[in-house]
Image (cartoon, rainbow, N blue to C red; front, top):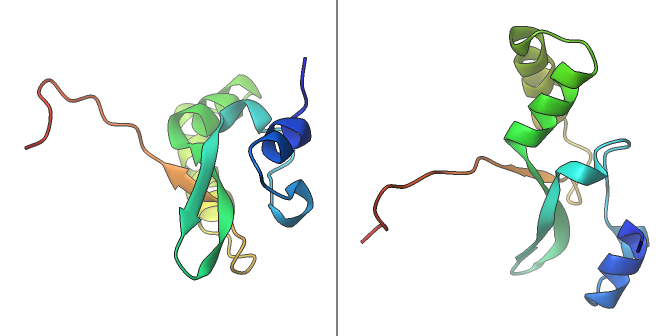
Length: 93
């Protein structure tokens, strides 16, 4: 089994420059590249909230904690981002 660091380095990223949330590696969906800015780790919002619920929070507590402590945290330009997956019945046009 490969580690997150190995996967990132195999994909051409310097793992030491990417900020990750401890305990949420299974919620990572990828790396976001932005022009003129460093790449950042991207987490699946629904997976992060589900992880908080699995740790004993109610859905409401998990959403509040996520919004304030994770989504609301700014740690500089390497701050991770959060993706909200969409389920579309038809492709966007």
